[in-house]
Image (cartoon, rainbow, N blue to C red; front, top):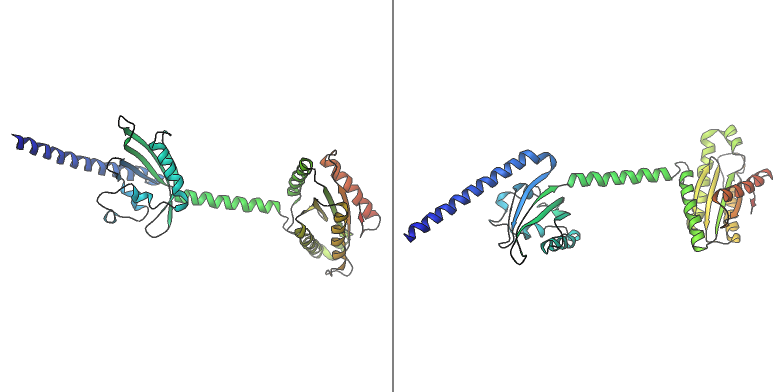
Length: 325
């Protein structure tokens, strides 16, 4: 009688195992059909007591492992050992927090190494579904997504946006800041000058007789003058960590940070003299007029720009090739 009961139990267990296997296969097949387009790699189930993970083969296939490559019983570490070293600590900490009951779900992105050595990006969701009386996890289930393509596209979009943003900040002719970028930089430097009580000077520089160059030599040659002067300005300000840009057609603006009036004058004079000594492809010396104003914390940005603009106009009217403080 006892033997008969044992045989019945063995048969029943075998039947249940076959049923579970068939149900799991049906679930996996269904997930393949229903979620293939979403990059859903299917559900996973983790028996915490036996440390055995049951999962849709898609999860392993996505990183190059076929069923024949897997052990008979796949432990939790089969996947966690393949997590990128830079991601693993965070992943394991989030898992530990959830196992302790400190978070309601386990949700994490991580890079996982494929069989060929490359990395995929997985987005994993999991939850403890059963605990014992002492709160120790017994069973977990979750779902995992392959988001490699999405992350790549996002990274590419970030790169393109940054490149576009940088292009909007840089004047294509002179490689200096654009006017819109200068306005932002000016506001930032004024705020810092007020906050830390640092000296800030604004230098305006204009190419003398530029409209004549356009009429006599054409746009291409006159723009070459601006390009070369932009290079001269870039070389001088780069050595001192200042910000320079093309404010309008033949006018440049330079923000001089944390230097004295004498130092600001010396820098402006260096640019003026270098321009005068440079041989351009025109039959005359090219000169520039400059004006410098020191920022006063009591004035507005508009007042600062207006003040230095008036000085520049005076320098131009006085014949150019000079600096007015």
